[in-house]
Length: 310
Image (tube, rainbow, N blue to C red; front, side, top):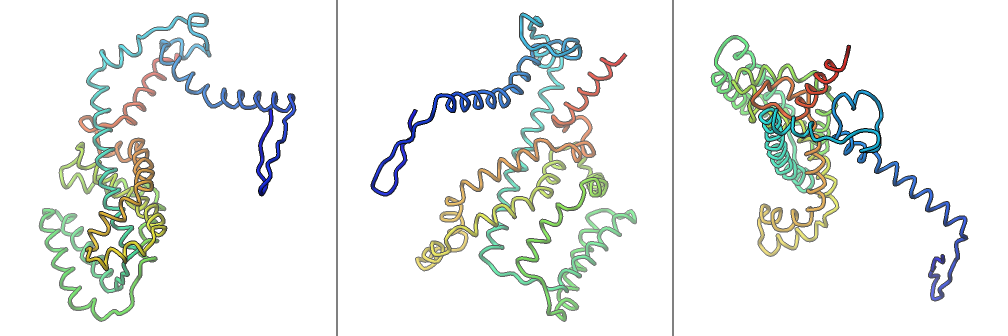
C-alpha cells in the first residue's frame, strides 16, 4: 500500500509495510467492535425475557437463548396506553419547548451581539421589589391576578421615580453572564418554588407546565451557544442590507438566520436531548396525564428490580 504526498510541485509516494498495515486494520476492527457492541447488546436484550436478562450474559441468539418478542408485545399491546401516552407527552413537550427556546434564545443572543444595552441598577432593584410584593400577595392568600397587578403597578411607579436617580447599570456582557449563571444553581434548589408556582396556577400535570419550565431552564444554553455563533457572522453583510433599506427584523430573518442554520440545528439537537432526558422537573410537576418517558423508564426499572429480587 502506498500513500501519495504532494510537496510543492513534486509528488512522492511512501509505502506502508505489510505488518504495519495489518496492525492498523486489527486496531480499526477492534475499535469498531468496541463502538458497535453496545448497539448489538441493546438489540439482543430486546429479544430476551426478563428472567434471561437477569440470569446472566447471553450473547448469541438461538445458541445461548431463544429469541422472543414477548417484551415487545407486553410494551405495545399489554401496556399500550402506558407506553404511547408518555411517548406522546415527551415528543410534544420536547419539540415544543425546544422550538420556543431556540426561537427566543436566538433572538436574545442576536440582540446581545449587535445591540448595546444599559440596564440601570434602579430598574433591577425596582423589579426585585415588585416581584417580592407580588409573591407576598400570593403567599398571604390573595389571588395571583391581584399579585400580578400589584407587582406591575409597583414596578412602573418605582421605575418612573426612584429608578431614575441611579445612573450606573449593567451592559451586554453582564446580562449574558447573569443568564448563564442561572444554570449554576442546582435544579433541586428551584424545583420546589416551581412546583408551588404551577400549583397556584392550577397547571400541575399539564403540557404547559413542562413546556414553560423546560424553556426557562434551557434558554441560557441557547443564548450562549448562539451568541458565539452570531459573533462569527460578518457584520458587513448586515450593514449592506441596512444601507439598502432593510429593517433590523428583515436583516435578522433574511440574512442572519440563513447563515446561522448550522448553529441553529446543532443547538436545537443539543437542547432537545436535555428536554427529552429531563427527569427532576417532570417528577415534581407531573403525575399521570403529562408523565414523560424518563419517569416511565425509571418506574419500569424499579418494578423489574423488585420483581427480580428474592
